[in-house]
Image (cartoon, rainbow over all chains, first blue to last red; front, side, top):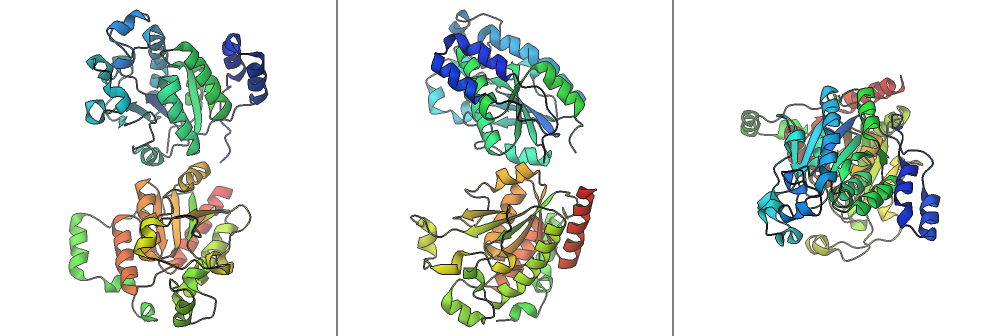
Length: 237
Length: 234
């Protein structure tokens, strides 16, 4: 079906953000690749919150790198800023009757090899951050790897809701958000990645990932545009 | 070989089974509430029907997996559904057994099969794909396994799959289970699916109808396709 709904993608701005670290050749390649208009969004969205648990931000608002002493996986104040930016988006989705889906890790149930080395328990604190925590009736997806699709019932759930579009928030932009967006695109969902609501431990990874995702798989859109879009579309069937 | 024509599959189910399924809470309908169906034609290739006009026995001499006359009877019904779907501008897709391209693994171990030359793997001409209709080549019973079918259904915004072709107990059932698992509504037209075994066919139609989808008649399905087609156009 045609993607008639949408929001302006931040394509040009994303390129500007990374320009200082690009060689002339890289800049030329990326500028050549840049899309001339958004891929577009559908009309039956869900809001997907990826890994918004305390291990990713710590339980106090401490800047990096100090935050790492107590919270080795913390993204510091960038994480908290994104959480704050996600609050109104979640509220808008709930008000519009749009499904809000919370994705998290498996905790100690099914530890991944790359996570076993993090002995510190705070690295496995998968309790949802209170500001954006699930409400009763909202779905929680527990995933064994980076992508919210691999080894989970997410496709089943999205078809249940008749979803054709995902608005993606969360962390890390270069890790689980990136993996989830790639799989969502492979499954032919339309995707909005919300700029202010994604975060990473390393800012340059965040910037490059957003640029990459916007060029290939979805539209990176501003939180304000995302809220406008949610208000514009009707709730799911 | 025409034993399948003698009794309706519903009449083959024993009353105690019907009662047990009823008590278990199975058998509710999910049919007709979808508005965006896709017609999926599964394994209607010459290796499952044999050449047109040949007896089932002769067919099996040529292609031992062939269902022969029963297949051709179903092809007539599939063709009718196909025409209705195309006239209603509803999406059509195909799944088909891939010609062996690599090690066949457990399938080759369980059921060794000759690799045929020529038309064997072609989709039967009477129901062949039109331009733009996708064919998903598969290496396992389910049309969903290792194929882009799920992506295609999402891309088209479908909420229902109509499964036609063969075999009822094998690839139709496998697709029904997976489509159901992905939360699609499943419709199986009883006259447009075929099998080698009439008993396996009847038992699986009963089971699919009870647990995963709805086994439906040709006329009511044709009416539905026309209705949703005109609703989409309008």
